[in-house]
Length: 473
Image 1: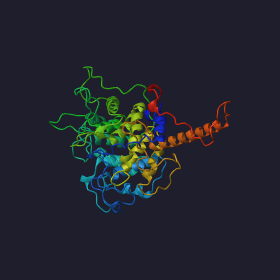
Image 2: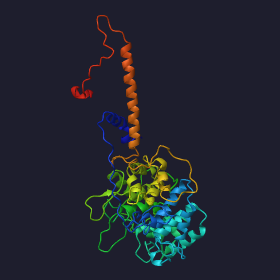
Image 3: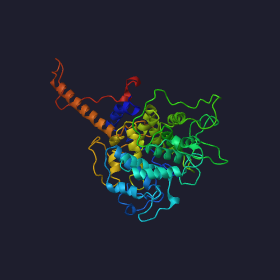
Image 4: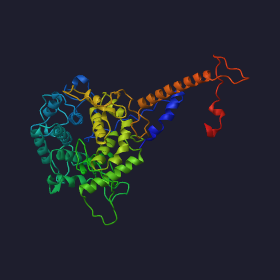
């Protein structure tokens, strides 16, 4: 179905020709808030590019997200049939510790410290190496490490030994599923991985507008509240999915919220029902906020677009069988997420760019022309030159800043470049029609008793639209 942006294209083109239209406004480029969860893609203190390992994607300080962004980049590029440089793969393998876990990052020559290993980096590395293939031994060691650090309630923490949280539990389940393990058979203290994830979901005992969502982590004395990123990342796991998200069984009906008819039992529910309720909550939030999620940074007065949460929501909705509910959010990302991917302090953000590549593919959009941006090339250029890459995508797609930006309330990948092209085409048609009209006027003989206009006579000026009746303008 044509979107509002495309339906209004002709009118906007005409306005451009008359000099009355302005360029589309840029979307809000405020970065998502940095949290200790797996989704952290912004570095805390950017370092000069000379301090970044040669095999690593991105130029920012890798201290907090080196393994995370490298893994995402490798997953996304491999899905696009790009064979990464051997240095990129070896860098990731070299970060693994002897016990099987990965830290967020460790400098070359620095010994592993168990306290620095984290479940998020380890799980994402598992997904990357599984996608690449041929790395069964490090994957098996990592899966064993994850199983060994499961909390007694079935959950996982960011760093082993801490209380579990929804984001880390969800990301670990993604890794286990990618490695071919059933979360129902991964347990501690009699609680499975599914139990651990469901323990963070808000059920019928909470307010109606919170039901189905996930909280990040319960805190004593603090009311339970829905967390958009926790809910978004939990959906992919609850749906039994992992990265990359590919085909799935499509459900005809919208996602089902918890019935909460008074007869619902307390406690965790089946993960399929958990995913449905989470999908229902996220779908409602997308609709309420213009087909994207928002988040408020601590201390801020207003909420800003949450690009990461929106992207993970698209991935989760597709994996749970609801691609129709994901389509508008994917279009919104195509029109608005370029600053998140390419305009950070250190240029391209490889984690953000890779996440958008994965999101585009899951939503069956073109990552080579995602709202006018060639995300695949953008990601390739942020790291070592690949061994090979297919000649794919729209050659007219661009990596220029602003190429993929539309108004914040536009829910499509409609780009400024497309609009300008249409305007030029309309301009050519107008010039041709005017030329033909003048030739026709010269060719028509003057009526008897009238004087033909001189060849160089200018036509009488047309009346302005202000002089016409309102209904005919």
